[in-house]
Image 1 (cartoon, one colour):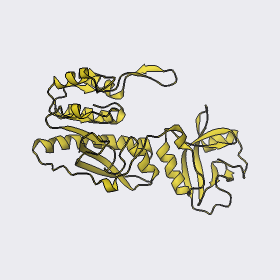
Image 2 (cartoon, rainbow, N blue to C red):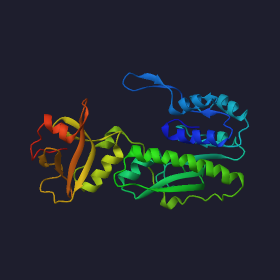
Image 3 (cartoon, helix red, strand yellow):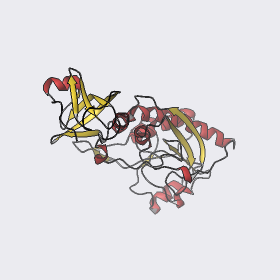
Image 4 (spheres, helix red, strand yellow):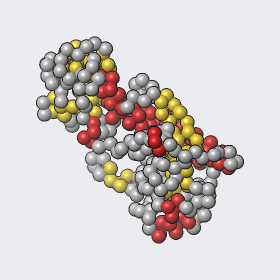
Length: 304
């Protein structure tokens, strides 16, 4: 059971490992993009390519869904970014339980946005956790986990792709260890749990009073969606890449302190931030060098 790109490497890993996949369950086809064209989920596209039967329920709480799944007598569920919370009755179907692969080192960053939040919070490492599912949100007993460093210029897309591949490897290892009863599930320590709430468009607004290092991490974590943004006057500007300049800010937070042919310097709560990539609303994503060819941003201008 899964829906987005993150789940695809795990489905392919299952296929390549020779495990029998009786059914792929994914979200219904939905309109996407500016044209609102009805699109298949990435998992559905992969399942069609691999030749698997597919089920796309509007709800996982109907008798019809329960009956279709229980008729297969599955040994185990594998759930990765499915988009539905499975009720207890459904979780009780597979003989060996339901495994969920989550993109964090649980119990840290439970919830829907663990990758982005780990980068924004300047974590040094993250990983993937395989757990036995219960009725809670990412609260099940831990089976196995795999760690990785978060690189200094890591963005959400690059970390997403690395973790999705790690999830596939961890899934196959977990199934292998379970088949020989080599895993002792460990309860999560709820006292150290944290939550990574769903990101909303408004969450991308940059707070220039924060230190430049925190803002630079915020920009990487918010890329590409919802995107870190600020305003120059009434113009909404997205910022996609930046560098910290370890020089004292000589202006108020958000003030443009200067520009060169290929740099725009912004004062923050501590140090300066050099903007590298920028996009005006409805405009193209540009390097700051290309942007400054067409626009001059006067020192003293306040970004807010």
